[in-house]
Length: 339
Picture 1 (cartoon, rainbow, N blue to C red):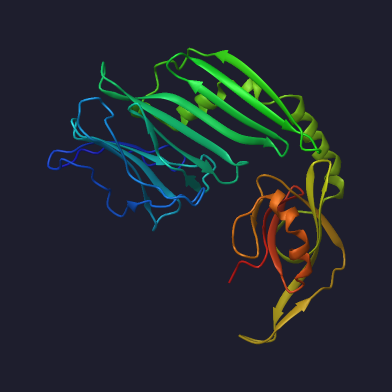
Picture 2: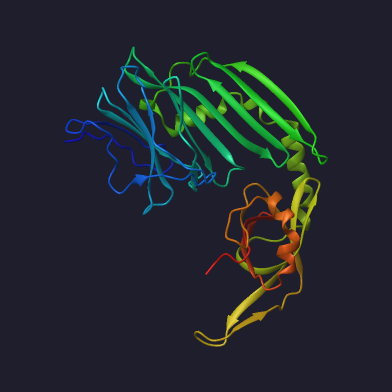
């Protein structure tokens, strides 16, 4: 018999502590199977074996997925001597897809992580170590990486044992030169106070705030002003549209797309397709880090990659592109990967 404590909330990291009495090994939850390949980088994902609590017995860490549910991934750490599994659901705080990466281990410390869709390639990486004094799985490290702007990359590392953190900001200019800024600080509020047992959305949000004063500054404000200056020239909000792409280009470190909206109709049920182009107005939209882009080969691509394949995309005049827009920015753009 299992005693299960579970909080059902899609916007919260789900946590289960499962004492196992009748089984002396890792137990995969019903409906789940081992993840063997990372959707983040396409590389192999394997079970990781370690001596997490330094008792001479082999412990196991795995990633599992329930393919019948939306982006349902779990990190599971089974501690043999305690006959207990720690389970953490990997949840995107924006309620979109997550992309787990390989589990790593060194000196009885285990790390799991993942990227969040729709967040400028936001990655979270959590390090765990056993705390003998309280028999708990302690979070000793919390790292995040992401693009705060198309030209600004942030990498933050927070040591929850010492309370020290480092924020590294890399700013790229149009010539490909890097300007690296590094800031160090100390925050004892969460020092030695974060465990798998109290892991939650609120805890994640508190961790994200550490060092955040070094993450947003004048570059972000200037970028927002730059976007705002183009608002009057950008297209209106459309929840679903079909169009031809006329031009893809970069300006002021921003990516723009000129499109020609069309209508698709059919002569009758299952009949011939008719393409109507009654509105000859060319609309301009912006593409940013939140835009979901699918190339002609059905792979997710970045805005930078889109500008690189611009010629091949525009040369294929048979491609009818679908997408949606809000506030002058394309929420999604799909170059024929549908049906």
